[in-house]
Amino acid sequence: MSFKSLGLSEPLLKAIAKKGYETPSPIQTKAIPPILEGKDVLASAQTGTGKTAGFTLPLLYLLSEHPKEKYRPIRALILTPTRELAAQVYANVKEYGEFLNLRSAVIFGGVNQNPQVAAIRQGIDILVATPGRLLDLENQGALSLKRVEIFVLDEADRMLDMGFLRDIERVMNLMPSKRQNLMFSATFSKDIKKLAYSILKNPVQVDATPENTAVEIIEQRVYRVAKNKKTELIIKLISEGNWKQVLVFTRTKHGANKLCKKMVNAGITASAIHGNKSQGARTKALADFKRGTTRVLVATDIAARGLDIPLLPHVINFELPNISEDYVHRIGRTGRAGASGEAISLVSADETTYLQSIEKLTGLQIPVEIVEGFEPDPNASTEPIKQGQNRSKRQPRNSNSSSRKSNSGSHRNDNRNRNRRRNTNRR
Ligand code: AMP
Image 1 (tube, rainbow, N blue to C red):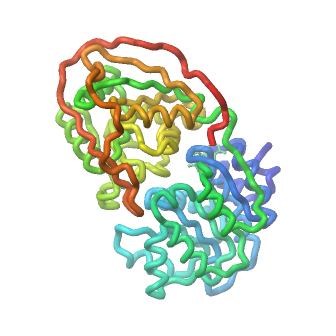
Image 2 (cartoon, rainbow, N blue to C red; image 1 turned 90 degrees about the vertical axis):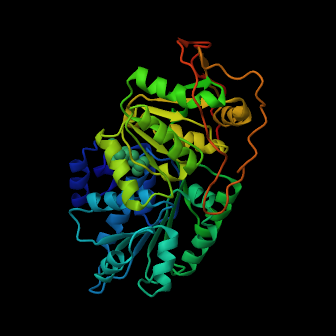
Image 3 (cartoon, rainbow, N blue to C red; image 1 turned 60 degrees about the vertical axis):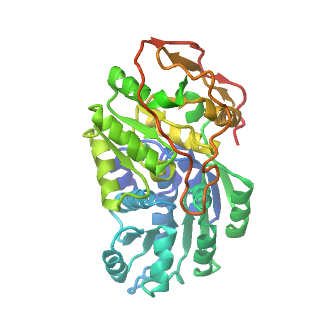
């Protein structure tokens, strides 16, 4: 299968070649043809599968084929949950559309709206947006969605996690009812299916989760450890392993800041990325991390969503997420584009039930190791931490994430079993 045989036009093929893509990924092979036929599509695909090109390429094709008007109304709207994802999707729209005469803009909160409004005023065909800023600018009369022909809802599951359901409904009411709808989601809960039912008309369903998804191909390991020894253990693992590019997940913004500070104190270059950071700080942190100036990026789930970091060798869960699907998203950051990756989780007694839920969801038993000097506390309660079990509407917020100093020790494998696959049905 080639991009050409999918029916894409020369300007798009040229842009694809420039990006260096040789063959379409499974999601692209499955999603592009029905989108080109003008059908609604419901796609199951997580970040790293090439889903962005999967909807952007046919969208660009359709818009470039249909006549443009002098006054350019917004004809395609791509809605994403986070600023980072919006920025990345926009970058892709620009790259893939380089040889087409189409205009696009991106809008998201946390930055001055004036340049965004000015960009829209020039007349654009494609708008990439996060819900809050989109509704805000529409409300101000700075944009209209009355001429939208193609609507893309990207990472729909994350949208719901972040409490954007009402906003999505508001956005839908601003668009004409006759339009093409594309919805992408990594997971399919009852709520997602309900949302899909309300947005899509006779959708073609494509499931491009490859047989060997991240969950099976990524080397996973759990270190059982006392809660107050996690920080020292993570510093030891990164330092002694001489790991150069490590994405670390914490459950809270506060936890991310605190861990980041301790890493820096230990001589490891690190920065934190979360919702309380300004857009500028987040962009810089990500750029430094990609460039290799910063070894460790400490992130919360929401901030990390959609980050395009190719060939990431190490992901560490400093704390397990209380939502099992987030574990799959997190470890999906490794082993992209065929590269191997390693996902490590530091698990204290109070996270035992989270670990059990993750193993149930993924159908994998994750090998457990204990590092000498960092043994789990045998007296610690396995009761899940109480604070912040539920996500609030917009700001996911969870428990505290502290770790303190302890003694060091040598490394011992308690269990060298490879991941064992129990079943493949993870959804
Ligand atoms: P996405 O899932 O859209 O975030 O894409 C993940 C990564 O795969 C991005 O770095 C894309 O540039 C890259 N990519 C997308 N399509 C292809 C392809 N057909 N061949 C190789 N890489 C691709």
